[in-house]
Length: 183
Ligand code: GRF
Image 1 (cartoon, rainbow, N blue to C red):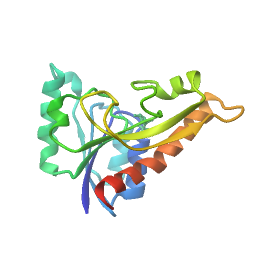
Image 2: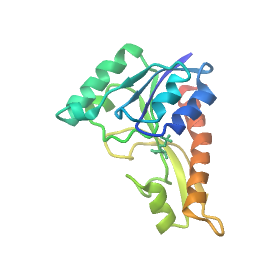
Image 3: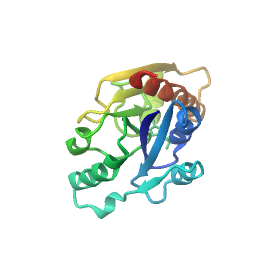
């Protein structure tokens, strides 16, 4: 079984989807980690007996110090892959260089890097999308593993568009993980 670690900061709906699609065959989510003590994803992981580490970034003086602690906490789990799923942190080479790390971003990259990507795609484009990419030092800038475009439909609202983007995420992320792990 391939060993996954999943990092999240909030709702954890992608985390839950990965639990439902991959956990306990063909992968094991050996641990989940969040920087946010109030993240709703914590309960989702615990409900499936997945160990959760809460590592609050506010206790650290720099991004590097935080990332050093992250590497220290995750190394014992020996992950084959570290999966960022709504992990709202800018990460440094300390972390990038320690593991194979992938991220999911809710736009058709390179469009709309950074935060509020769904809202900005909706407001400024004819389409949005979802991209899964390797994590490099550049924010939302690593090599694309898998991406799909999503055209805005007639009478699309931000709510319906957001929902469609999330559904696409739930399909693409497990597929991308299988692909990079050769499963
Ligand atoms: C997702 O849209 C993901 O693409 C983005 O943050 C959101 C996280 O949502 N990076 P959730 O916590 O998985 O529900």
